[in-house]
Image (tube, rainbow, N blue to C red; front, side, top):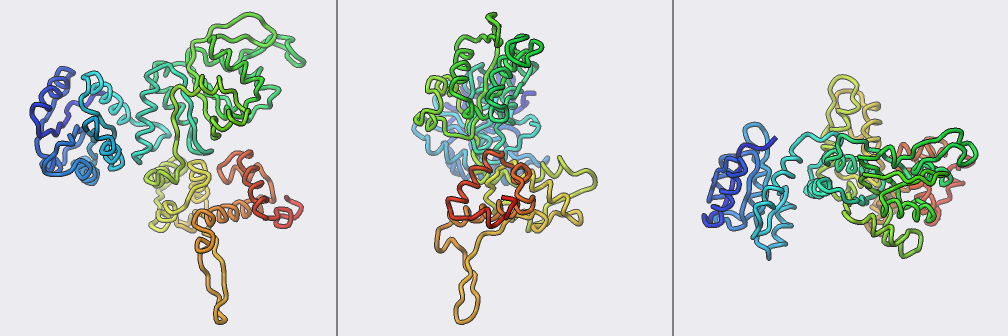
Length: 453
């Protein structure tokens, strides 16, 4: 639903007039202001277009203050910065300060209206997506732009960052939203079966094919298919996938009949595909076919503003009855933790805390987060504990803390890799990589776990 009113803050009337005319012709009611501070004092909500030409306050300062001054309903203004072509750094600073998006002057009327449509779409409730940080909002802006096309999307990010959720967001905001969304985890299906799963097969095509079966591409026809963990696909199958993407048709195994496809393809990976191409494990032509509209979900540690809202989201999702809030020490612990397992790990931590709590508050102790590794030294007969960062640096300390946490969870589950991976919120493959790294660091897993390792 379109916003009924928009605030435009532009001291220069000659620049303001054409913007006002475009907005009014599009059906908006526009309030024009020449003073930035006056709008802050009025605490206006809705969408505000704010110019870099302000005389009484800087653009970034206005945006920061606007986020701290909600309107009577508790809503903060949706700020769109308007900057000149040579003010790219200012645009970036505005986004960091809390702006939802920006426009570079001079701009076409279509650019302004298209941006407003994207912003309004972001204001609608979104299931399973929490985006409070400016980086998350920026990614959703790009995702919404991608949704308006039929181009192939490549989503990258560490394990557990929510790549499938972002893929669903693209689908739900596209013209294919009422069509199927089919997700395929290329790493979870044995290599010998993946081709049949993707492309389908005819009766008798191979041993055990007792009847014909459609593939995932057919099932997703008209809609969207997500190829998750695409980097794990075998080279031979990559060549067949490339042909499907090029020809927009698929043949079932054992058949020579082509099935035409009208489909959007979204690929996702936690690997660096450029590096995989250089190493010869991923086809270069397939990479360029997939990397049309790239979207990168930053790890949770790089968007700390999302941590507490996500925590509260998961509390609401898993709380069976009653009320529950995060205590102050729990909130501090969540923000300070580095989240190697990203959102998936946070979700598991909240689920566990809801079981461990003893009242209406989740405490830091209930979270059961690992503590930073420390070294103990003896000075004048007294034990002194000092952070390992003093010797190895902050990054090394985090790594060792993560290794210790993994070891603790392994012990808790008697060395069971699958249960440990689920508790950590990572894939079993990611856990194997971590265990290999631990061995490289000299950690003797066999000695630590005994026969369980």
